Length: 540
Image (cartoon, rainbow, N blue to C red):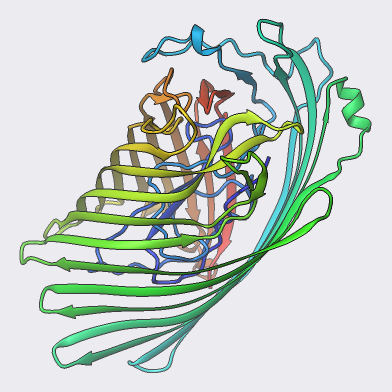
């Protein structure tokens, strides 16, 4: 279930590298709430708005700049399992078990014989309901050329109710049998970040320094029930409490971006105090304290012809909410904080007389106590999650351009290898399952600036993921997959100046509703189908 789920709350802590957080369902290629971090050149200033994943089962918007809980957190660039839901979070999904290792052929696409959860021959018991809401604000006041203060605050709450049905093998070479489950989960988050920015010079060196203090609170609880009798039986059962946690975190940070001639030096440090209280199914309460210092150092040089080489190094500290199984005792325990270190070198090219940037980077990230599934289930039907040591190494290529005629283009390519450095027997040195080596994304958009369609925006894109392994022993592969996305927006301010700041947006993910099968840690799921999201936003 949601054991050891990472809570990604965010503030605008500048000590953290720019982090992109995206989420897919349990049945997606990533099969996780995915966190992908990359360091940017310190020469390029970016404003990061607060955002966070509020729950282990809460989808997050892709492509937003976020920071996780905020820390200097260079998490591995491909998705890491962080939400051990034992069933897809889509009512239309299906689940199955992969064939035994003897039936697999390495380096081949595994033909899966999945049994849909919803079948006419069985009572309907396959639903997922979620309620969520959030409220917050961003405050900024500039006193003078020296001092600017900001405060960002957000509160979020989400609760879920999931009915599911899966199959299990009662004994080797025996027909699969069905069981039914009912799972409820609720999550609350609060985060506030207070910072002061100082802009000043010391001789020939220009400084943009930030000092801040932030606080975050999270509360999580889950309830679970399983029946091996029937759907009618599980429907009548109460859903008992299984576990809960409360996390309080305070962080103090300081950074300074220094510019001299064409050089930019970025240095930052952060110290976190984290207290976690955990309650198990028997209402036994345990406490855990985490303290850690993280830092980042980066250097870049801007040439006269627009080329900016850079290098940086950072460490990270990220507390986790939830439970994992100890690899030695196999006893469930509270998850330890995840730590990591990242090295990156790269180059950016700002094409003269255009609004276009090209970039290339090489990264090497080592993570300790990362959260992953191990493909097994406990007596309550929860998929076990463990903490492993992982290494991610690869290259990234990106292009971002916008043109005067209203067109915009974003393209990215990542090639990486994510290796298990410490884990279960037979997995050390292997690649983490459901982690493709090649990921390509292309997105184009156009906004009408005049005539009858002024304010209308259209966008479309394609996402490609290469083959990946279906289990952590790398005995079989998932097929490559390609998805198409689209977006439509309308800015009402173009038609009526009094409605300036009001925007309507509709996003469609997996537009053509492609639903293949993807396996992770030996368990296989259907891809998330087409999803459409609409939003109305007003900024003032």
